[in-house]
Image (cartoon, rainbow, N blue to C red):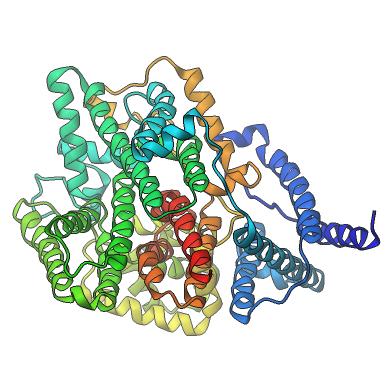
Length: 606
């Protein structure tokens, strides 16, 4: 063995040792599998993987120079890792600086992280530049190339069928269960969170009414022709077909854009076999439809940017209108995606400016009419303002927990009017704001809210680190591959069976459900391939694509990515850390958009 190779191996082992000491490389939340001490086995597998990967990446690459923007980007990712590791260990930033030993360890860890990240980037760039992927021709691939959309659609459905059989009629989690109760006008906690327009109508727009109506009417129709289970299956079947249709179209879109055929086929395999796709196809959450429409929206932006026609066809106008309206109807914060992204398209596509402005104004008028006229006229109450206050109220709750002695009697009185001060300290959960939000006073006036924010600002200047830690504790999982949580739904939720409201039940294939759910739970922790369903890793890819688009002066790619970047901002403002549903829009589209933009950047350079 050459002396240089031995040096590289030793170098890799030293780096790997630093990376693996004194921390969980992939932290397992308190999930059902932990009773088998999954964290122990994940630590072992991850440690071995890191050791081998560190040695491999050091051997395969040289310490080449990279540009300053790339260095800054890697430093940013490194900081994410250090912060994440600190919060996983101590719940704050003190793990980084509490003593000399801890600071020295984190400094060495920062250096090791940076070296491995840099070498990984160099290696990835080398693969993208030189590697030629060729799809071997056989009977299967010939069918794929002949009709990529139809072949993909059928393949996905075949591979997902086992999930349909196991989880028939649908996977219900708390949110869709509450929505079904609301559909039948059963009082739920959401009616208690808002001031009802009509005390006899318990349906609110906390969860989008449009989705609630689809879910409830499918159930009602199934009850009419067969039974409740069949009605729920009608919903999940339509949703599954739509998701499969959407994902199949992304493959067709890649092929139409002359993307490498082998890469397109790999994307298909990911859709077919990565468990997050079929499980969310069978889940009753609103996010599956919302994610589909975000995918269509991103592809539509890309299509409009690169079209060379003099005007937008009526077909395209109708399609983009439907997609944008659907985004607003399936998630209440969908309107922010439209408001912050579509104007970028208007500015860029000057030749279509008038048409695009009309489309944009049309969507805003529709949304305003729907939320401010139609729903109130039906006595459907809007969601509470508390949903927009997750960041400040978490900061206040953490402040009260650690620095309550610094508050005056008047400060306490003002906070109490908004958040029920007496139990605030006990209710504080660093990674989810719901326990704090749940005691938000729905009768809070604008004046009281204004007074609260005066106290909030005063506390910010007294102990700013508490506010920073409160926010970081609620978002670090969106930026670090170390954290996973609230990943999939698979359990039987019996809320809607109470008082015989709905006859919902799983079939007797409990063993099959167990096998599929365990496969899905373990999947994120499988070395390398598991990163496909890792929120933090997908965030890195999204930020990386944005960086390279800037470096290559491809503003149009940033416009295409803008709905996904805005989705990331929504995650930051969300009430829960590392909540998979919130990151679905950019996680589900990542195999497609990463393949599309990387191939284009490669061709642009050539």
